[in-house]
Length: 106
Image (tube, rainbow, N blue to C red):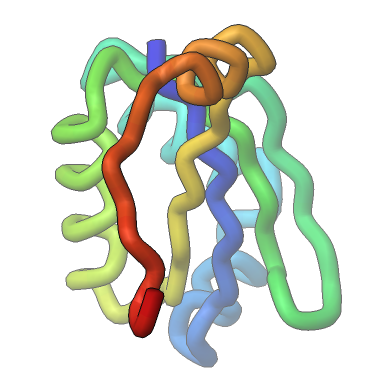
């Protein structure tokens, strides 16, 4: 399954919701959303600084990740970004593929 690193920051309204529901309340919602699309939460951590929340999630496909991302962003409570994570084997496979490329000006 494709794996993603999620980094998120609560908006002021989202932070108020977190204060009301607590971390375990938000974790339950995240688990429900992710598992509802056939995924799994591998890790979920709250943080402070540039990001309020960091997660690693597995989804059956990239469309499922996009659906969650769009829905969460549309709520206005969270600003997030998803980074696809690749295994060592996937990178090894990528290094074996031939790519025809000419650098600009070369």
